[in-house]
Length: 72
Image (cartoon, helix red, strand yellow):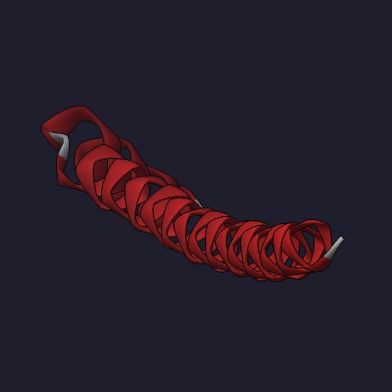
């Protein structure tokens, strides 16, 4: 009977430790996903800005803008 109590105690400790580890891993994965989402939003903003700047560096766009400014 004493061996059974020790076994139940050890199994309870093992289950508790595994539960803590699983919760910690879920928290870590959630934090990593939030950071990746934040980085993806920043990359999207940078890409949009670069695309806009590239559009303005086009000689056709600059010439059209200058021509439209003098026409008004």
